[in-house]
Length: 228
Length: 216
Image (cartoon, rainbow over all chains, first blue to last red; front, side):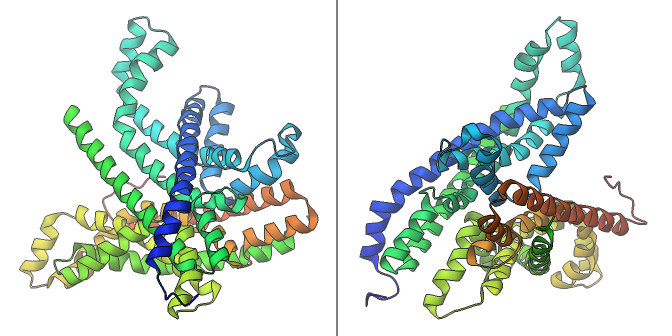
C-alpha cells in the first residue's frame, strides 16, 4: 500500500483531476455517439417492423429480440473481432476501438429504443392517421408532420432512461482498449498498485451522474405532464 | 461443430451462475422492496441506499470493486462468489423497484381489511399483500432475469471460465472468431428464450382461477 494507508486524499484528487475527468469525457462521448446511433437505428427498425411486407416485419422483430436478449459484451467482441473478418474493408484497424464500441452500443440499444418508439406510435389514435389520409398527406408527410411530432415527446423520459443505462454499460468498452473511465482506473491501479481510490472514484462518478440524470428525467416527465 | 463440447461446458457454468444470481436477486428484491415501503427509517434508509447505489453504478464497476478493492479491506472472496454476489445485488436493486411498484398497486382496501382483522403491517404484507402482488411482478422480473443472464458475460473478466471466457480462449486458440461468437450468441439467445417462456408459464399458472388477463 506504499505506506499511505487505505485511502490517500492527495492521490485521489491527483488522479481525479489528471486522469479520471479526461476519461469521463471519453465515456460521455461514447454514450452520446451510441445514443445517436440507437435513436436513428431504433426508429428505422420500428418502421421496418410496421412494414406490410411480412418478411421485413418478421426479420426486424426477430433481430430486436435477438440483439436484446444476448450480452452486449459479446456483441462488442463480435463487432471488434469478427466483423473485420466478415467485411474485409473494415479490416486493418480501419474501425478504431472507440468507433467499434460506439457502433456496438448503438446496435444493442436500438433494440430497446425501437420498443419505446413502438409504444409511442401505438399510442397515437387511429383518427390521426385517418385525418392525415383524408387531408391527402403523403406517407412521409404523415410520419414526419403528424405522427412522430406527437409520438416522440411523451417517450422522451423512457429514452432518457436508456441513455442512462447505456452510460452505465460503457465500462465494457474497456475490454477493447477504449480509454474510458474503467480502463483508466485499471491503468492507474496497475501503475501505482492503488486500486482503491481509482475504482471507488469511478463508482462515485457514475453514481453522481446517474442520480443527476434521473433527476433530470423526472423533471422532464413533470414538464411533459404539465404541457399536455 | 468440434467447438460445441467446450462451449457447452462454458454454457453450463453460465446457467449455474445465472440460476444462483436469480435466486439471490429475487430474495434481495423482495426484502429491499418491502423495506423501502416500511415506515421504520432503519429499514427504509438502508433499502434506499442499496437500491440507489446498485442501480446508479455499473455492474462491471461493482464487479471490479468487489474483486479488486474489497480484498484491501480484508474481505477476500473467490471470483465465483464475487460474481454471484454482484449479479444478485445488481439485479436485486432493480427488482426491488418492481416489488415496490407491485405492492403499491395492490388496492388500499386490502391493507385496511387486514388491519381490521388484526394483522400487523408486516404480517399483512407477508400474508395478504405480497401474494396478490406476485402475479403482476412476473413480466418485469422476467426482463430483469434476462438482464442478469446477459450480465453473467461480465464475470468472464474476473477469470471465471463461463461461456464468454471459453469463447475468448477458443478464439485465441483457433482464430475461428465469427463462428465461435455466432454460436455463443445463439446459446445466450436460447437460454434467454427459456427464461422468458418459463416466466410466461409461471404467470399462467399463478393466474389460474384469478380474474386477470394474461398476455400471450
